[in-house]
Length: 408
Image: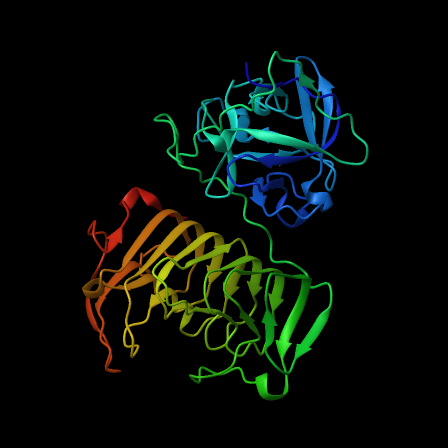
Protein backbone atom coordinates (compact mmCIF):
# COMPACT_ATOMS: atom_id res chain seq x y z
CA UNK A 1 0.00 0.00 0.00
CA UNK A 2 1.43 3.38 -0.94
CA UNK A 3 2.19 6.19 1.49
CA UNK A 4 -0.61 8.66 2.11
CA UNK A 5 -0.52 12.15 3.61
CA UNK A 6 -2.77 13.12 6.51
CA UNK A 7 -4.53 16.48 6.64
CA UNK A 8 -2.08 19.17 7.77
CA UNK A 9 -2.62 21.28 10.82
CA UNK A 10 -3.29 24.99 10.78
CA UNK A 11 -0.13 26.97 10.12
CA UNK A 12 1.88 28.83 7.50
CA UNK A 13 2.95 27.05 4.32
CA UNK A 14 4.25 27.41 0.81
CA UNK A 15 1.87 25.68 -1.60
CA UNK A 16 3.96 23.94 -4.25
CA UNK A 17 2.31 22.64 -7.41
CA UNK A 18 3.22 19.04 -8.20
CA UNK A 19 3.29 19.54 -11.97
CA UNK A 20 6.20 21.96 -12.13
CA UNK A 21 7.46 22.62 -8.61
CA UNK A 22 6.32 26.24 -8.76
CA UNK A 23 4.71 28.12 -5.87
CA UNK A 24 1.31 29.74 -5.41
CA UNK A 25 1.76 33.50 -5.08
CA UNK A 26 0.09 36.89 -5.18
CA UNK A 27 1.72 38.47 -8.28
CA UNK A 28 4.21 41.11 -7.10
CA UNK A 29 2.58 41.02 -3.67
CA UNK A 30 -0.21 43.25 -5.03
CA UNK A 31 -2.44 44.33 -2.16
CA UNK A 32 -5.62 44.84 -4.19
CA UNK A 33 -8.68 42.64 -3.78
CA UNK A 34 -9.59 40.89 -7.03
CA UNK A 35 -6.02 40.15 -8.11
CA UNK A 36 -5.84 36.68 -9.62
CA UNK A 37 -3.45 34.22 -7.99
CA UNK A 38 -0.61 32.78 -10.04
CA UNK A 39 2.31 30.36 -10.07
CA UNK A 40 5.94 31.46 -10.04
CA UNK A 41 9.37 30.02 -9.30
CA UNK A 42 9.64 29.45 -5.56
CA UNK A 43 11.73 32.20 -3.95
CA UNK A 44 10.70 32.11 -0.29
CA UNK A 45 9.10 35.57 -0.42
CA UNK A 46 6.13 36.66 1.67
CA UNK A 47 3.95 36.73 -1.44
CA UNK A 48 4.38 32.93 -1.57
CA UNK A 49 3.53 32.36 2.09
CA UNK A 50 0.00 31.23 3.01
CA UNK A 51 -1.66 30.94 6.41
CA UNK A 52 -4.11 28.06 6.81
CA UNK A 53 -6.64 28.68 9.56
CA UNK A 54 -9.35 26.24 10.67
CA UNK A 55 -12.79 27.14 9.35
CA UNK A 56 -15.62 24.62 9.58
CA UNK A 57 -14.72 21.56 7.54
CA UNK A 58 -11.66 23.14 5.95
CA UNK A 59 -9.28 26.07 6.06
CA UNK A 60 -9.20 29.68 5.00
CA UNK A 61 -6.06 30.35 2.93
CA UNK A 62 -4.72 33.82 3.66
CA UNK A 63 -1.76 35.56 2.02
CA UNK A 64 0.95 36.46 4.53
CA UNK A 65 1.89 39.40 2.31
CA UNK A 66 -1.53 41.02 1.86
CA UNK A 67 -3.83 39.58 4.55
CA UNK A 68 -6.41 38.74 1.87
CA UNK A 69 -8.08 35.34 1.40
CA UNK A 70 -8.08 32.97 -1.57
CA UNK A 71 -11.58 32.62 -3.06
CA UNK A 72 -13.38 32.06 -6.35
CA UNK A 73 -14.45 35.10 -8.36
CA UNK A 74 -18.16 35.74 -7.89
CA UNK A 75 -18.41 32.65 -5.64
CA UNK A 76 -18.95 30.71 -8.87
CA UNK A 77 -19.33 26.93 -8.77
CA UNK A 78 -18.55 26.15 -12.42
CA UNK A 79 -15.19 24.93 -13.70
CA UNK A 80 -12.68 27.39 -15.13
CA UNK A 81 -13.54 30.31 -12.85
CA UNK A 82 -10.68 32.46 -11.58
CA UNK A 83 -9.25 32.06 -8.09
CA UNK A 84 -8.27 35.43 -6.68
CA UNK A 85 -7.47 37.18 -3.42
CA UNK A 86 -10.48 38.73 -1.70
CA UNK A 87 -11.32 40.61 1.47
CA UNK A 88 -11.65 37.85 4.05
CA UNK A 89 -15.18 36.96 5.12
CA UNK A 90 -16.88 38.62 2.16
CA UNK A 91 -17.58 35.51 0.08
CA UNK A 92 -18.84 31.97 0.41
CA UNK A 93 -15.94 30.41 -1.54
CA UNK A 94 -13.07 31.09 0.88
CA UNK A 95 -13.00 27.70 2.63
CA UNK A 96 -10.75 25.00 1.17
CA UNK A 97 -10.61 21.34 2.13
CA UNK A 98 -7.14 19.80 2.05
CA UNK A 99 -7.68 16.27 0.77
CA UNK A 100 -4.80 13.73 0.68
CA UNK A 101 -3.87 12.35 -2.76
CA UNK A 102 -0.98 9.91 -2.36
CA UNK A 103 1.74 11.90 -0.61
CA UNK A 104 0.33 15.25 -1.76
CA UNK A 105 -3.03 17.05 -1.61
CA UNK A 106 -5.99 18.39 -3.51
CA UNK A 107 -7.19 21.82 -2.37
CA UNK A 108 -10.93 21.49 -2.82
CA UNK A 109 -13.18 24.52 -2.59
CA UNK A 110 -15.89 23.69 -0.05
CA UNK A 111 -18.47 25.81 -1.86
CA UNK A 112 -18.02 24.45 -5.38
CA UNK A 113 -16.33 21.06 -4.73
CA UNK A 114 -13.83 22.00 -7.46
CA UNK A 115 -10.03 21.69 -7.17
CA UNK A 116 -7.44 24.46 -7.21
CA UNK A 117 -5.74 24.16 -10.60
CA UNK A 118 -3.34 26.33 -12.65
CA UNK A 119 -3.98 27.07 -16.31
CA UNK A 120 -1.46 29.14 -18.22
CA UNK A 121 0.25 30.02 -14.93
CA UNK A 122 -2.95 31.47 -13.44
CA UNK A 123 -5.19 29.83 -10.85
CA UNK A 124 -8.73 28.67 -11.39
CA UNK A 125 -11.00 25.92 -10.10
CA UNK A 126 -11.61 22.74 -12.08
CA UNK A 127 -13.04 19.27 -11.61
CA UNK A 128 -10.85 17.09 -9.41
CA UNK A 129 -8.91 14.28 -11.08
CA UNK A 130 -5.42 12.76 -11.03
CA UNK A 131 -3.72 15.42 -13.17
CA UNK A 132 -0.46 16.50 -11.56
CA UNK A 133 -1.38 20.17 -11.85
CA UNK A 134 -4.24 19.66 -9.40
CA UNK A 135 -2.05 18.27 -6.63
CA UNK A 136 -0.01 20.28 -4.15
CA UNK A 137 2.63 19.76 -1.49
CA UNK A 138 2.71 21.93 1.63
CA UNK A 139 6.10 23.16 2.83
CA UNK A 140 6.08 24.54 6.35
CA UNK A 141 7.16 28.12 6.97
CA UNK A 142 8.33 29.54 10.30
CA UNK A 143 7.79 26.43 12.38
CA UNK A 144 4.29 25.52 11.24
CA UNK A 145 2.95 22.11 12.14
CA UNK A 146 3.99 19.95 9.17
CA UNK A 147 1.61 17.52 7.50
CA UNK A 148 2.08 14.07 8.97
CA UNK A 149 2.17 10.86 6.96
CA UNK A 150 -0.33 8.13 7.69
CA UNK A 151 1.53 4.90 8.67
CA UNK A 152 1.30 2.20 6.05
CA UNK A 153 2.23 -1.46 5.78
CA UNK A 154 4.96 -0.76 3.26
CA UNK A 155 7.04 2.34 2.46
CA UNK A 156 6.58 2.05 -1.31
CA UNK A 157 6.24 5.50 -2.84
CA UNK A 158 3.02 6.23 -4.65
CA UNK A 159 3.03 6.34 -8.42
CA UNK A 160 3.30 9.86 -9.81
CA UNK A 161 0.12 11.50 -10.97
CA UNK A 162 -0.36 11.92 -14.69
CA UNK A 163 1.51 14.91 -16.05
CA UNK A 164 -0.91 15.34 -18.90
CA UNK A 165 -1.87 19.01 -19.31
CA UNK A 166 -5.20 18.07 -20.85
CA UNK A 167 -8.03 19.86 -19.05
CA UNK A 168 -11.33 18.20 -18.18
CA UNK A 169 -14.13 18.61 -20.69
CA UNK A 170 -16.06 20.98 -18.43
CA UNK A 171 -13.21 23.49 -18.16
CA UNK A 172 -13.96 27.05 -19.22
CA UNK A 173 -11.46 29.61 -20.50
CA UNK A 174 -9.29 31.12 -17.80
CA UNK A 175 -9.90 34.84 -18.40
CA UNK A 176 -11.12 37.18 -15.67
CA UNK A 177 -7.71 38.43 -14.55
CA UNK A 178 -7.84 41.75 -12.69
CA UNK A 179 -5.26 43.91 -14.47
CA UNK A 180 -2.89 45.70 -12.14
CA UNK A 181 -2.59 49.48 -12.07
CA UNK A 182 0.55 51.01 -13.51
CA UNK A 183 3.10 50.83 -10.68
CA UNK A 184 4.89 53.66 -8.96
CA UNK A 185 8.66 53.33 -9.17
CA UNK A 186 10.44 52.56 -5.92
CA UNK A 187 13.68 54.16 -7.12
CA UNK A 188 15.46 55.47 -10.23
CA UNK A 189 18.48 53.84 -11.90
CA UNK A 190 20.26 55.25 -14.97
CA UNK A 191 21.78 52.64 -17.30
CA UNK A 192 24.79 53.66 -19.38
CA UNK A 193 25.72 50.15 -20.60
CA UNK A 194 23.58 47.09 -21.18
CA UNK A 195 22.79 45.02 -18.08
CA UNK A 196 23.57 41.36 -18.80
CA UNK A 197 21.18 38.95 -17.06
CA UNK A 198 21.78 35.30 -16.26
CA UNK A 199 19.42 33.46 -13.93
CA UNK A 200 16.85 35.73 -12.26
CA UNK A 201 17.06 39.53 -12.03
CA UNK A 202 14.50 41.17 -9.73
CA UNK A 203 14.41 44.94 -10.20
CA UNK A 204 12.18 45.57 -7.15
CA UNK A 205 10.08 47.87 -9.34
CA UNK A 206 12.85 50.41 -9.82
CA UNK A 207 12.68 52.58 -12.94
CA UNK A 208 15.59 51.98 -15.32
CA UNK A 209 16.33 54.53 -18.03
CA UNK A 210 19.07 54.95 -20.59
CA UNK A 211 21.91 57.42 -20.19
CA UNK A 212 25.11 58.11 -22.09
CA UNK A 213 25.33 55.77 -25.09
CA UNK A 214 21.90 54.35 -24.19
CA UNK A 215 20.29 57.75 -23.94
CA UNK A 216 18.51 57.68 -27.29
CA UNK A 217 14.72 57.54 -27.51
CA UNK A 218 14.21 57.32 -31.27
CA UNK A 219 13.28 54.48 -33.61
CA UNK A 220 16.75 53.98 -35.06
CA UNK A 221 17.54 50.36 -35.84
CA UNK A 222 20.52 48.74 -34.14
CA UNK A 223 20.27 50.41 -30.73
CA UNK A 224 21.54 48.44 -27.75
CA UNK A 225 19.07 47.27 -25.10
CA UNK A 226 18.92 48.23 -21.44
CA UNK A 227 18.74 44.52 -20.54
CA UNK A 228 20.13 41.52 -22.41
CA UNK A 229 18.90 38.14 -21.17
CA UNK A 230 20.88 34.95 -21.62
CA UNK A 231 19.10 31.74 -22.60
CA UNK A 232 16.80 30.72 -19.76
CA UNK A 233 17.01 34.02 -17.86
CA UNK A 234 14.15 35.77 -16.05
CA UNK A 235 13.60 39.51 -15.66
CA UNK A 236 10.96 40.54 -13.13
CA UNK A 237 9.54 43.62 -11.40
CA UNK A 238 11.17 46.22 -13.66
CA UNK A 239 9.94 49.57 -14.97
CA UNK A 240 11.60 50.88 -18.13
CA UNK A 241 11.38 54.66 -18.25
CA UNK A 242 12.48 57.07 -20.93
CA UNK A 243 14.74 56.91 -22.79
CA UNK A 244 14.40 53.14 -23.06
CA UNK A 245 16.81 52.52 -25.98
CA UNK A 246 15.95 49.09 -27.44
CA UNK A 247 14.33 47.80 -24.27
CA UNK A 248 15.03 44.11 -23.61
CA UNK A 249 16.78 41.51 -25.80
CA UNK A 250 16.32 37.77 -25.23
CA UNK A 251 19.17 35.67 -26.65
CA UNK A 252 17.17 32.46 -26.18
CA UNK A 253 14.25 31.30 -24.07
CA UNK A 254 13.37 33.91 -21.45
CA UNK A 255 10.67 35.01 -19.04
CA UNK A 256 9.56 38.60 -18.40
CA UNK A 257 7.34 38.92 -15.31
CA UNK A 258 5.69 42.18 -14.28
CA UNK A 259 7.83 44.30 -16.62
CA UNK A 260 6.47 47.74 -17.57
CA UNK A 261 7.48 50.03 -20.44
CA UNK A 262 6.36 53.61 -19.78
CA UNK A 263 7.53 54.93 -23.14
CA UNK A 264 8.69 52.30 -25.63
CA UNK A 265 11.85 53.25 -27.51
CA UNK A 266 12.79 51.29 -30.65
CA UNK A 267 11.02 48.13 -29.40
CA UNK A 268 9.96 47.04 -25.94
CA UNK A 269 11.54 43.60 -26.31
CA UNK A 270 13.14 41.56 -29.09
CA UNK A 271 13.27 37.76 -29.11
CA UNK A 272 16.26 36.24 -30.89
CA UNK A 273 16.61 32.56 -30.00
CA UNK A 274 17.58 30.35 -32.93
CA UNK A 275 15.97 27.11 -31.79
CA UNK A 276 12.47 26.10 -32.85
CA UNK A 277 11.94 25.01 -29.23
CA UNK A 278 12.76 28.46 -27.82
CA UNK A 279 10.00 29.59 -25.44
CA UNK A 280 9.57 33.24 -24.49
CA UNK A 281 6.98 34.32 -21.92
CA UNK A 282 5.72 37.81 -21.11
CA UNK A 283 3.51 37.51 -18.03
CA UNK A 284 1.86 40.61 -16.60
CA UNK A 285 3.07 44.17 -16.98
CA UNK A 286 2.30 46.58 -19.79
CA UNK A 287 3.59 48.94 -22.45
CA UNK A 288 2.51 52.29 -23.86
CA UNK A 289 3.67 54.96 -26.30
CA UNK A 290 5.15 52.61 -28.89
CA UNK A 291 5.50 54.44 -32.20
CA UNK A 292 5.85 51.11 -33.98
CA UNK A 293 6.34 47.63 -32.48
CA UNK A 294 6.09 46.53 -28.87
CA UNK A 295 7.38 42.96 -29.25
CA UNK A 296 9.68 42.12 -32.17
CA UNK A 297 10.19 38.43 -32.95
CA UNK A 298 13.36 38.00 -34.99
CA UNK A 299 14.35 34.49 -33.95
CA UNK A 300 12.57 31.15 -33.92
CA UNK A 301 10.25 29.60 -31.35
CA UNK A 302 7.08 30.65 -29.56
CA UNK A 303 6.27 33.84 -27.67
CA UNK A 304 3.43 33.80 -25.12
CA UNK A 305 1.99 37.17 -24.08
CA UNK A 306 -0.48 36.88 -21.21
CA UNK A 307 -2.12 39.10 -18.59
CA UNK A 308 -0.62 42.11 -20.38
CA UNK A 309 -1.93 45.59 -21.13
CA UNK A 310 -0.94 47.86 -24.00
CA UNK A 311 -2.02 51.34 -25.12
CA UNK A 312 -1.02 53.97 -27.69
CA UNK A 313 0.94 51.59 -29.92
CA UNK A 314 1.66 50.56 -33.49
CA UNK A 315 1.88 46.75 -33.36
CA UNK A 316 1.77 44.65 -30.21
CA UNK A 317 3.57 41.75 -31.92
CA UNK A 318 5.40 41.43 -35.21
CA UNK A 319 7.13 38.42 -36.68
CA UNK A 320 10.04 39.94 -38.59
CA UNK A 321 8.89 40.50 -42.16
CA UNK A 322 12.26 40.96 -43.85
CA UNK A 323 15.03 39.53 -41.66
CA UNK A 324 18.04 38.07 -43.48
CA UNK A 325 17.38 34.73 -41.77
CA UNK A 326 13.74 33.72 -41.52
CA UNK A 327 12.10 31.16 -39.23
CA UNK A 328 8.69 29.75 -38.55
CA UNK A 329 7.40 31.71 -35.54
CA UNK A 330 4.42 31.43 -33.22
CA UNK A 331 2.74 33.79 -30.80
CA UNK A 332 0.06 33.08 -28.19
CA UNK A 333 -1.82 36.15 -26.92
CA UNK A 334 -4.07 35.44 -23.95
CA UNK A 335 -5.91 37.75 -21.55
CA UNK A 336 -4.64 41.04 -22.92
CA UNK A 337 -6.17 44.49 -22.40
CA UNK A 338 -5.73 46.78 -25.41
CA UNK A 339 -6.51 50.49 -25.25
CA UNK A 340 -6.79 52.60 -28.41
CA UNK A 341 -5.06 54.17 -30.26
CA UNK A 342 -3.34 51.21 -31.85
CA UNK A 343 -2.93 49.61 -35.27
CA UNK A 344 -2.31 45.84 -35.14
CA UNK A 345 -2.24 43.24 -32.35
CA UNK A 346 -0.38 40.51 -34.23
CA UNK A 347 1.43 40.52 -37.56
CA UNK A 348 2.63 37.15 -38.90
CA UNK A 349 4.22 35.79 -42.08
CA UNK A 350 1.78 33.26 -43.52
CA UNK A 351 4.27 32.06 -46.13
CA UNK A 352 6.69 30.86 -43.44
CA UNK A 353 4.06 28.97 -41.45
CA UNK A 354 3.73 31.53 -38.63
CA UNK A 355 0.72 31.35 -36.33
CA UNK A 356 -0.96 33.80 -33.96
CA UNK A 357 -3.38 32.26 -31.46
CA UNK A 358 -5.52 34.77 -29.56
CA UNK A 359 -8.00 34.45 -26.69
CA UNK A 360 -9.55 36.67 -24.01
CA UNK A 361 -8.60 39.92 -25.76
CA UNK A 362 -10.36 43.09 -24.61
CA UNK A 363 -10.13 46.23 -26.77
CA UNK A 364 -11.16 49.55 -25.21
CA UNK A 365 -11.85 52.85 -26.92
CA UNK A 366 -12.05 51.46 -30.46
CA UNK A 367 -15.75 51.72 -31.22
CA UNK A 368 -15.12 51.70 -34.97
CA UNK A 369 -12.92 48.58 -34.68
CA UNK A 370 -9.98 50.11 -36.49
CA UNK A 371 -7.40 48.02 -34.65
CA UNK A 372 -6.54 44.94 -36.72
CA UNK A 373 -6.55 41.89 -34.48
CA UNK A 374 -4.37 39.72 -36.71
CA UNK A 375 -2.72 40.62 -40.01
CA UNK A 376 -1.05 38.22 -42.44
CA UNK A 377 1.99 39.09 -44.54
CA UNK A 378 4.18 37.50 -47.18
CA UNK A 379 7.60 37.90 -45.62
CA UNK A 380 10.99 37.80 -47.32
CA UNK A 381 14.70 37.56 -46.49
CA UNK A 382 15.98 40.27 -48.81
CA UNK A 383 15.12 43.36 -46.81
CA UNK A 384 12.16 44.47 -48.93
CA UNK A 385 8.94 45.58 -47.32
CA UNK A 386 6.71 42.51 -46.80
CA UNK A 387 3.47 42.22 -48.74
CA UNK A 388 0.17 42.50 -46.84
CA UNK A 389 -2.15 39.52 -47.45
CA UNK A 390 -5.14 40.51 -45.32
CA UNK A 391 -6.46 40.28 -41.78
CA UNK A 392 -8.96 38.39 -39.67
CA UNK A 393 -9.25 34.78 -38.50
CA UNK A 394 -8.42 32.14 -41.11
CA UNK A 395 -7.80 29.11 -38.88
CA UNK A 396 -4.25 28.73 -40.20
CA UNK A 397 -2.10 31.78 -39.52
CA UNK A 398 -4.61 33.82 -37.49
CA UNK A 399 -6.26 31.44 -35.06
CA UNK A 400 -9.12 32.86 -33.00
CA UNK A 401 -12.88 33.34 -33.02
CA UNK A 402 -14.68 36.65 -33.06
CA UNK A 403 -15.96 35.75 -29.57
CA UNK A 404 -12.34 35.78 -28.34
CA UNK A 405 -12.28 39.56 -28.75
CA UNK A 406 -14.45 41.85 -26.63
CA UNK A 407 -14.92 45.56 -27.31
CA UNK A 408 -15.54 48.08 -24.55
